[in-house]
Length: 324
Image (tube, rainbow, N blue to C red; front, side, top):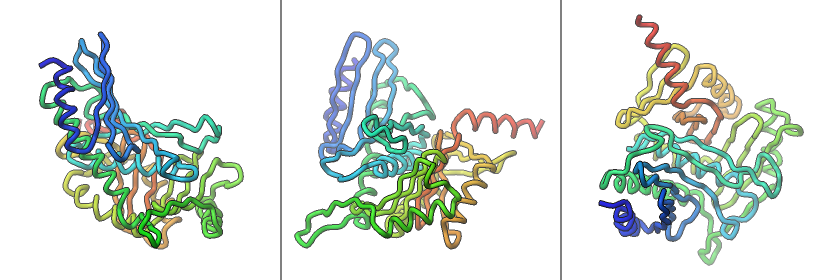
């Protein structure tokens, strides 16, 4: 089967998921994009080396100002982290790297114009095999559908008396109090650090991001409790934890993809959680290539940390050395 035939067949398959596939072909490669027919917040993009028959896959997260008012860093942050978490702990067991695209218009460092998720493990380039490639794309779209489903959970949605979804974005007195309280608890310099703090209505949460410290904090009890209970059974079924020399190895039992979180970084996360939470809540920690995503029944903490393949391999070698 020729590569073009694969893509023509894939076009018909993705339509059943309410997605649309478009692609362009040159002598050397095929570039393609897959977007939801109604929800365009996340796109699955890729390019194929025609000669080698290998594909490079990545996601782009970019919301529309036509749908969401105000600055949309929080949406790009939450969307990308939920998708990364689902890809990591779901049936595919993929580990992604999340990369920021800053807002070149405002020149404000902490604002996210968009985000890119690059699939780093178990492959960076996968051979296209008829059937296997199509199956991979379908499974990735299922992960996207799950992300859309979570983000449109009724705990996040507000509507007016006419039943129309009510969109709002504000920096009010309650978020001002929150804005002062969080840096105080974490001992962050609110005046000098590039920080974003605000509330959003539909989806509903309060959001804090410190660009310099490499962390984000999203607070909404209803949503986070729903997200935690949605992901916890999948996490328990698919992720195996191993205590190692200097931290914990997280291995997906189906894909065998492993990431690593050092005890030093975990201790920092625990200190942050203890300061932000009145009491220790149940939580799951999901290390991906360059972040640790912590989801509890009250909040989401996104913490910048090197947890990827290279860190895992270094730790694996340390662990092996203890048995020699």
